[in-house]
Length: 343
Image (cartoon, rainbow, N blue to C red; front, side):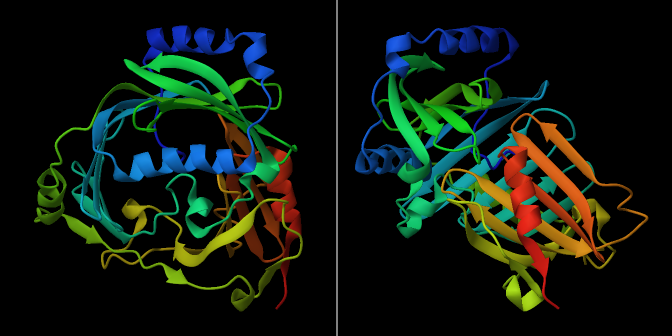
């Protein structure tokens, strides 16, 4: 998931050398004792603040499950305002423009523009913004020394989970600014499930908000889709999560369009809606979608895996439940099993 954290990985030839370098860490580095909880927060807040308050632009690549995708990203700050542009470099042309919490996703060939109001849930690590310091209860953080990523010196950090409900992470943070340059998601045996990293990046560039604002205003000839997200509560919709996964807490619950922009009617209304509840442990997310069961669309239960992203789909009475997250399948099953209809 692009949300994920952010970035992407180096191109194919560089990727091999990167992975071999990462796996060649001396044994003594991994043997270093974990840092204290206050230090964990300090490291992660530095990464978070750098992503929110730095001007940077570059190319990032994501490698997961044998698939590779790349994009150009630019992020600018002007006072308290944030501006971002993401241009996909593979597949169908798609551009994302963000001005604070207003996001335009534009498909030039289809002449469709999706206009949304989004919160900043996808910023990293989200729960630290609301004072949740419990990450250290579920992850050990260990420094692994320094390496170069995209021409920048970076501190390497290992976040090792304390239980089997979450994956581990290896992070490369720019020494000067704290900007996250690369992130590996690690399986239970330490294998790399997904890598995202800048292949090139310039930090501290001149702010150019007009390069984001102008395209957001030039939508003449586009079909504008404005899906509505209605805040709600799981209980108000007749559901309850009887048992939650340790470390995860609910951070959002909305009614939202289930399909993408291409599957809306001529009036721009979504053809399907779903209840979506998002849970997070501060570093990763699990989304639980609930929609009425439709035998034409929901033909069979499924469990799929692409890189770090796991998806569980199954019928529950008159409803269809989909659980998605960058977590082990045992965690998805725990969320699905804890969900109960109350009315």
